[in-house]
Length: 279
Image (cartoon, rainbow, N blue to C red; front, side, top):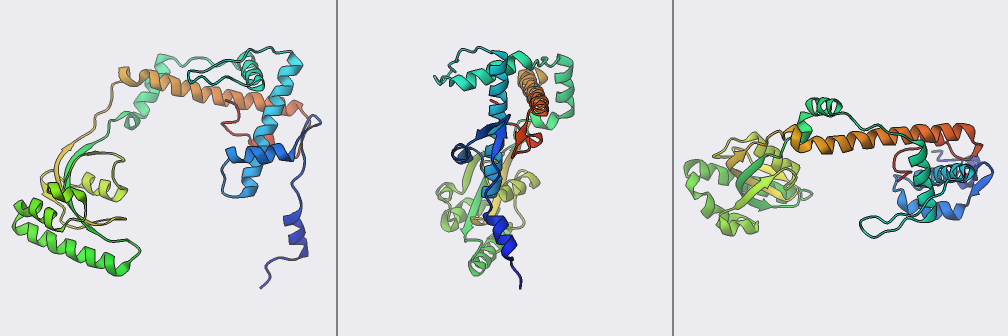
């Protein structure tokens, strides 16, 4: 079977092209240092993102210096002070990228069309009996499933025995308190366990075992408190900040595209520049 030929090996070994912005080269050493800030699926993709970020930075710095932009470094609330070049880039963006503040009507429109994003999490009060088994161990997992089904059958006849059975059988520390998990909200358990709670009615023991990476569970839902949509007055400021940030990033991308169109750029495609390059 052909894996690659001599030409393939040559292509793999061939170094990446030099990256230059208006004749100023971004050194390979600088790109190598920048790679750590750009996690990617492959080393090549990480290198490309690092090179693109540095190229955009150089493009902006050149424009700031050409314009004679002056900037004083700022210190943020954590005590971190900007480097001189960071201050130059910020001052250039502040001078050239005007972003209008979103109106209340725009914020309300976003709120009305994205109501689910502003809903508080559902809260569950639940208990469980865990039959622990690693999912990759088929025999152990099957045995846990069988034990859970047997426990469910016993509980059908005597549901008031749940706490006692949890104390005797559960591999979870909650067994010492009758399997009680207290209040659970979105994101605090596994997706499988969360989906099972969402599908249950309060006061019911799960008719089927619930399977998670930790093992097999018998679940009792004691109480469900449905989440509520937060009023606009509570989230309006958050929406305004989100919309302003989105508009700002689009405007910066457009500004970079304009500068790139005027520049002589080698070794990188700045048309694919993405968010996070300018802070």
